[in-house]
Image (tube, rainbow, N blue to C red; front, side, top):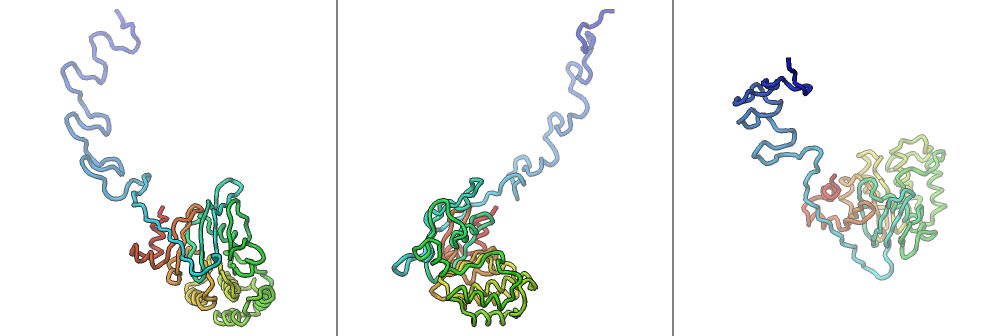
Length: 316
């Protein structure tokens, strides 16, 4: 018997298995997911894809970015109302850390006297780095920051009242001792003002700081900062740990206990709670200034609150 000399091939005159006979159509079902001969595909298309002949509807697939219109950004520096240096001036301010990333990237910003300014931006935008440079806690890599025309030093500490995000007060001290310490350290500190605010917020002056709650500690620290007659108040998250019932009082305290010719810079994520007291807003992104304007101009120009405009500018 003569065998096929090619391994795996069928004998001469036979059709390979699965193949139709000459002149016949294939029989059985086509491979899974393929239509029958002469028919259109049936069933739903892959997730996120439109039906044949239809436009995509609804949200795009989760792996594709949303197609949002680019928000309009405005930079309108504060008008200078008097001669002499500006209260705060940042010139090409740059700060690079060890790993090479610029926390501040050639930032140019001018703040004048008599304004309540919101310093706003997402996490990692450079807000805290800027605040620390203003207070002489960090040295810029490039550029400079000037307060009343002078670089951070002994003079600027006498005119800047700084509230850091974290408590730095000695936990063993009682509240009264802290008030007396600030009165000895700062010539512009007003003890009567401090005691009045402590009483209004129900803070016991004989209690040690370590026995107080986190929110009460932050109230004490804010009161100490706002009891000075400074020219520039820099407040880093002043109401973050404070209960909502006390926020209105604290905001009224900020408004009623500072020199009207001074400026308050508030850095916070709670924009909705503070935007009613803001005169101006500054948005920082990736260490650069992207928005500077009055709060009222944003409302008039875009027809939305500062909080809504912030969400639009920094939408992910």
